[in-house]
Length: 265
Image (cartoon, rainbow, N blue to C red; front, side, top):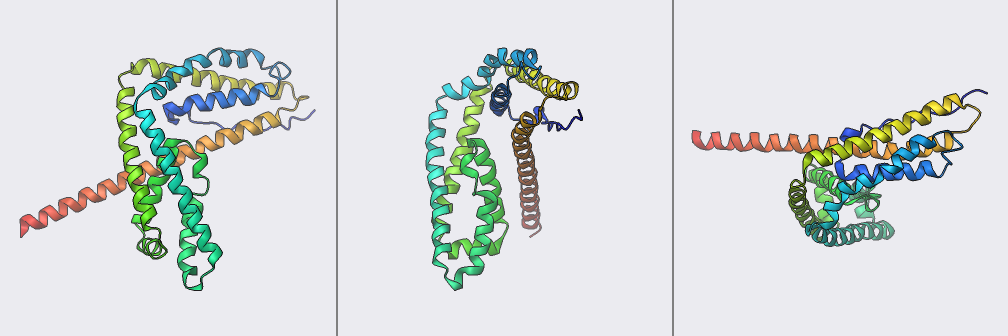
């Protein structure tokens, strides 16, 4: 029988943020468990991953116990409410269909669709990454900025920006507490669990070739959907990091120029 099974998408696990590794591995294990690992001849490797799941608690426990977690939860709730308010405001403007607002609203809807449409489904840190890029886009586009002001978004955006700043500061403080945990221990946990997950993927691919009479495609497709979502987050995080670095360099260069001009005068 011809092998029609697909290839599993690779995730660069070292680039997955430490606090997200746990979710990735557990979701993958849940997916594989639905497809009867024994029947697919991957049971032994699957069981090894399951046996090592308790290790992942070491990547999570600090975030649950740290006192700043409660503060972050409060910020998350209020931030989500503001995002919902922005989405409702946009929907109200779309329903109103005021001719004079059409062109400005097009810009805002495009912004909303790119950054806010699915943001509520993402975890706290991913929301922060998307919102950082959201504000960078607004701050570097005068026409868009003017449209948001004209159509009554200023109060929402001012509040949201404030919560975003508080989130970043609080998140950094919590991470500082995390740094007191032995780094070698958490690094080893991530390395070990990543190894077992990669091995499971390799075994699934090998089994799909060896047992071509069995249909591995539904399992592999579901894993691909999961892994593609993580790859997308990695790319977004990389883009945001690059943009922030560029803005930081630009600000530094501008400050240096202004200082030089002042001295020259």
